[in-house]
Image 1 (cartoon, chains in turn brown, orange, yellow, green):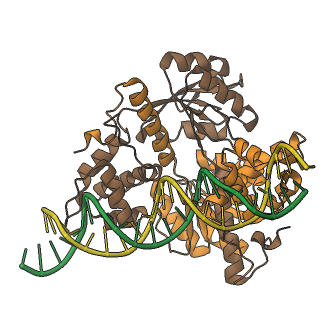
Image 2: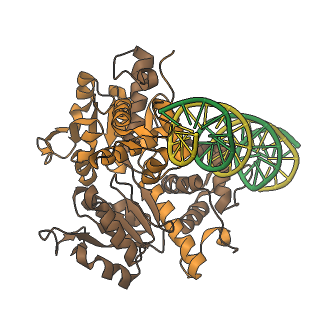
Length: 227
Length: 227
DNA sequence: TAGATTGTTAATCGATTAACAATC
DNA sequence: TAGATTGTTAATCGATTAACAATC
């Protein structure tokens, strides 16, 4: 099947970063930007930038760089920043509330149509203008509106159950903010927003540094203490 | 310098996932687990699992698998789940509040010692038992307590400024929840929790599928419409 | 013993970086 | 024209997967 270009996963994740830098540059009145400068601001290699951008646009001009306004528009189109993606969110706790109210989402084309919760106290209320509905209504609403993206911010114990209900109702992709590894059919995409994994990276780095730089005590570090 | 084993970044991010699956298994009364079963529950290949685990422990028994309680303990030690990492959090908005109150952090060895904000209304209050202090006190507290990890959940406009102040005071690693790309010295580690990148992955997948499976309209998709 | 599963080496795969002719 | 920067190919790097002898 033609016309659909497959973009490497890693590239896909960098595109929104480029977009953000470009809008910033536009606001500062810049007209053109080179792969080198864009890379510096975004935190990637200049060759990387050129390669990434060429997946979606080959309009760069040798000796000059990329016309910012055109490139930004092209990126915006590609990322679907106009026609937004509908989603439902399950779990009106602290994190769910924070996400539902996050202004960045609208910018990036996400439209949360409903929030679900099982707490009768919360049901009937609103989060950032979005109605909180009882969990029982989730399947029906997903089907009626043809929603395909589900966001899960319920407590871990309930996560699998919610995911099952969502999938049965037609959800095709899940954004999972719980630490539970969801079991899903292979045609459903799960994106785990894994805070524990991030934290592991950070604290490992800090530990390595306190060991290397100061020889401090810390935990005892790495595989030195295996067995 | 010996004794410090360098673990591949990707492996490092998978370790907390193994840990979580293992505690779950322990709770269910299991004693041993094979790389195959662990992989299935965690969502990774069995060879991957063996390779990852061997970085930190080679105690698996052929024909039997890994003794769960020992492996979990070993992982816990490695991830520093006992001796916790102190951190400060800047930005007591919705997301900051949600993170400060997230119970999973304590589990994973993170200890937020103070929350900073510039809103006089919030200062003097508490989030999940953590005091909210004025931004002006940030440098002093970081220095006094020797905190090396900073979490940033302020509005994008203020992010760079906050990062600068943190770094000047001694912060060595930053967990950045804003979409801004922070400019930092190369010996400071920044981990961007990039929601826009995640969203891009998800909505690209959904778009691809609606095009492939149904040939639906959607946005027009991919590079077909370059130029 | 026979069956299962490890630890590890080799093969494959994908992503990043370097290099450079083409071109504004 | 001379200088800068692109698009793209080739070289490098790191991570994943396959395979299998060793061993419980």
